[in-house]
Image (cartoon, rainbow, N blue to C red):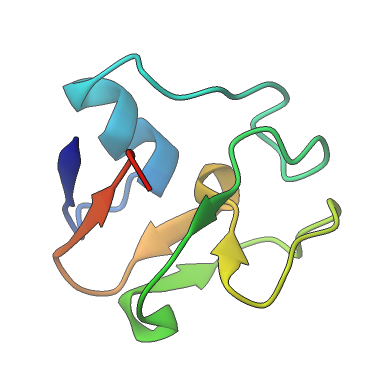
Amino acid sequence: MEITILNNNKTVLANILEQTKNIEYGCKEGFCGLCRLKFKDSNDFFYFEEPLASISEDEFLPCITKAKNIFKINLGE
């Protein structure tokens, strides 16, 4: 499922939840890491808090990021 993320001052997770409930999440504070997703371009988003969960170089935490640009992510990947 492809989701469009808007640069509307909401978290990336909030943008996703407005379009589908098909994402796992927990703390919404960057601690648990349940919401981690893979990204294609790190220039599409920014962290407004430092991630506390362990993530790989190609993953991000949508609960503590906001969009810089309008971009799409695929939840099926």
